[in-house]
Length: 394
Ligand code: NAD
Image (cartoon, rainbow, N blue to C red; front, side, top):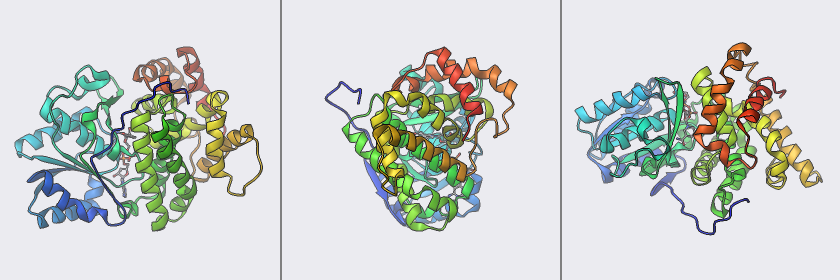
């Protein structure tokens, strides 16, 4: 919309395998890339039997595997060091991530640091550029989702400075993404809601981004439609495989859209909340989305109206401005139906939150994401917006 360029480069995983039972392809894909795999996963994936299933599928194709199951929260730099040690000690030549965005992001960092060296934080803001080929990486998401399987970004917390680092370089893009909605069937409603709203935020933010272009618009529009039409269905009935399939595809498309058009103000503000108050990524996005859209609305009425049409299932006749308002109201209703409220309702102490606002505003601006928003806030305005979001009425 605000884009003045005429040429665009699109990054995506070279191989995308998606659809019901796509997971069964993992052995065949792995065999093309290596002989011994490090599976980066978590204890819940292990308990659900996904890790054993993965090992068996690899074994059928003659690929050996060991696993790192230490991802017990959103990823921190120490997971990267631990998993990297295991990769090197065990001479693995391929990495598989199996889980939500936390497992995928950990694996992305390991794949790059293994061949390019240094500390993962060195790669933030292109301070260090990964020039060597990373260890081949197959990403298998079990949430729908972060879309991380199809993005060139990883988000890792710097534990020394409490900063959730957003690190973006082409080298973080997985070689293969295997997106199987069957793997999301076990996701409980709270995780389904948080991850689904995350995917919606990706689609909306990439559609509104100053860096959006026709290719990302196509992906973002399709993702918004799929997610708006299926979000409540998967929340209310986790076994609804058709809706799970639509969400998995929507999340993949939203990931591709934002990886190429970038996220904006919601994500910029959300990461510091995650780093300091440990609110799950998707939930903090949801808590910020309507407030940020209210703030940005006057600069992107037409695009918000496009989002409004997906919610307007009754085909009510509305002006562009009314459709834009309807989009924001509909997101609020969706959040309410999925028990998502504001930051205060989440139980974050008001004094602690207000004290953290100056640092959060500084960290948000430093991430670069707010600069992609159709309306770019100053530090002062950003601090005010955090206060609005804290009390925002859903
Ligand atoms: P997550 O990976 O942290 O998983 C949340 C919980 O859900 C975990 O306990 C996990 O074990 C469980 N879980 C996952 N799949 C399940 C399933 N099928 N059944 C039952 N339980 C399941 O959550 P997430 O939202 O997928 O990822 C969040 C992380 O991703 C954050 O750190 C965020 O910053 C990052 N992220 C990265 C990108 C990117 O492009 N790199 C994009 C968005 C978000």
